[in-house]
Length: 438
Image 1: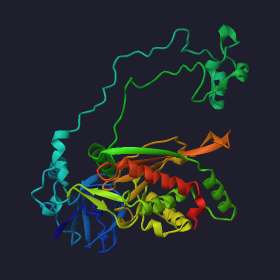
Image 2: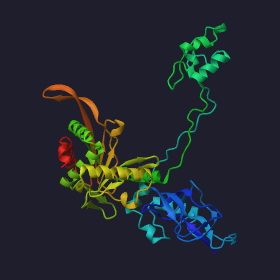
Image 3: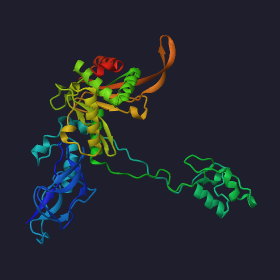
Image 4: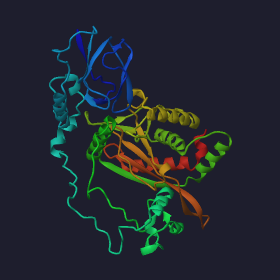
């Protein structure tokens, strides 16, 4: 008899997923526990093995398409030639799923599933009072002529040979004057032409798009969760920010010494190690806030989430018991977790939870930035790049370096003084990095 395959729930926070790839086609037989498809969830791309064997008769949601949890994605039969003409798939219909999602957004409890209703956070009932405003781009302008400053000559006179040679060599004909008949550019003039790069003098290209043209792209499952969680975090968590500039010279020197001995560690490894030790000294920063019970959470273990950027969004794999691991162990674990994150192979226990987050944009040379708290955690550390600056040493101005650390804290849990004390401890450890290798 026919039976329905619905979108499985592959992560604790998954509400919908995108079919990344079907490993079986219509008309093929699938064995129980055989790889059937890959699903992109809000956290990773997960392989799904069939629970039952059967013949795939119809695929309802194809590669690249989205479906909510328990929405029908395929119809299977026990016999190869069994009719499915009058069979109606079981599960949540797409329209019903959309209406359920809309209700969840305004904090309504879905009457059809007690289990799903428990995932609706109580503070969401305040959502109607904070309904998001509509921000829609203006439509492209129509019937607008492209204006160019007077004096330009949009039509360049050049011989066919000169045009061909200029195209082959990547030269910009608008940067030279012709010496041929009627000021026409000839091949001998090309020696003075500028390269046809992104920046060029006298470029006379004509735009093909109307002013204000744009295209829209849908959010990936991961990006949807990121946008929702960070918007909620920024809207409902009373953030405060504390910044401190540190001298990273000793850390740079120690890293070079370790490198000369065949030990490779990153600056981020030093940050993770120092943060773990600082959190041990300041347990009030290693905290969170439970919005359901309206209570402060004091985490008993130091589990540091490390932000990893992916094409689909951002994920924070977790280094568990970070304060019990030395610099080398932390370095190896962070590399392994980052690699699994980029391959979409993280297990739920490797990204679910955490007590403190580190976001490092230092590799891009940024001078400073502030990060949004990753709830239910109460703090996140933003790490800038190491920048060359003049510093005062023994009363003299000499070349040096500095790094800016910015702590974002939840003022319901952490006060500004506690944040400042945490950063001062962090500074002491990073400016005396020998303490991090013992």
